[in-house]
Length: 285
Image (tube, rainbow, N blue to C red; front, side):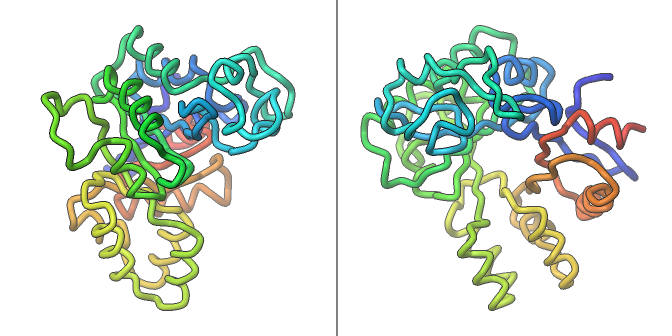
């Protein structure tokens, strides 16, 4: 089967984003081979970033090492070279032969490969701006500049994205800056929204908080809940010229297929999934 890049139903197409660099549910997370594969075929793919003890960025989701890697302790307590000596764990917790990557390592792999013009790697920064110092910001920009045109930087902290991407700062080469995304679905925000039902205010606040974001990342549960309440949150962001990603469909089954179908009906632009291959197979024409 061809690479799972998108799905189409009833004339509506959505990109499939490879969540945590997985092409299929059995994949371990964050392997370089899957990122390069996605970049080659023109897919959308996502990895997470956390700050290291050397003010670099590890391609990991958790702040603590033991669940995802063969290490222990906090990512922030280890330097970059020490992190490179660790290996990723598979879905059963067993060590793999795939090393932990740093952002710079990943970007060099991308630069050395063949990148499809449509390929887009989402860098989802998992912390906030308070742990970013000048060295971390400099390291991020140096690492990403050579491949920035194929990157989109996102976070729940719009301020962190502003600092890392240098928004508002002049540059002789704008192509060295990544695109911008924003995830407004913090637990606190969703709790408040459930209490106030101010759905329009939710959209307006997100747009004001991250005015440069071209992609808005929404929990699929929120999209479906607001749809049942009669509010088309995807349409509201579309009206403001933004694209929408719905996260995260783990896999396709009898429970999730109707959700995917409704997301397509609502014209979602992208669906984040841990099983792009399975979703694409289920929706193959």
